[in-house]
Image (cartoon, rainbow, N blue to C red; front, side, top):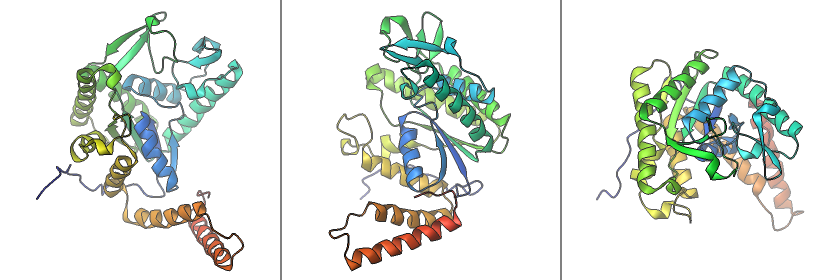
Length: 317
């Protein structure tokens, strides 16, 4: 008896991810979920330096500003709720003092520029096609920073606009890194505040835009079906968090395992098991700290860490 429809995935054999890979992750909160898994297994990653970004236009602006080495000034800031914010970035970069947020913004721009030039893989997770335009400047923003809604107009990016923004992202990145592999995926998080029909329309525009791009563009472009795995393989509310909107830990782990099976090379998979053993060992809480058994456990753990760090100097435990 078959109780699940399976999304068929092909193993990536030309440019798989290894521990030599340098991975940049940009986009919605689901990119944080995948990024956290990569960090757990000690891959070399740069994750959302400007914080979570939900729509293609925001990601394009980030990439453009990083490639062109934009310098942020006071003119790029807005003051709200006793903090300084930037419409290009998530509120995690916001600060009480102008100098602090400007330092964070310009540091993030510089680090993103370097990361994109050096990256072997870029994972872009798109969350929504809905965008907000700040009426005072007539500019689409990445984050509204809890500024009153009456100061924004809400718009839906068309399939053509999604495609054009993604094409610009690719052109910008390939201007400084011709060998990079770009992996697009659509976040399985449902944006139900927009409405049920509106969320479906939004996701549809993203998927159609990506597929249009993949069918017409050259280069190392790929699609990983995170959204489709959630909707078809995990179509049950037991795979959702309590809000019934976000994937729960089980779902995230499942999609991660499908990603690993598709993208990781065989040697990386072996090393991941070793790293996972170390990570679990570091979390181990003994009943008796001074017992001979625990001291032997610590000695063995230290030996495993030393062996792994010798082979991969960038790993820090």
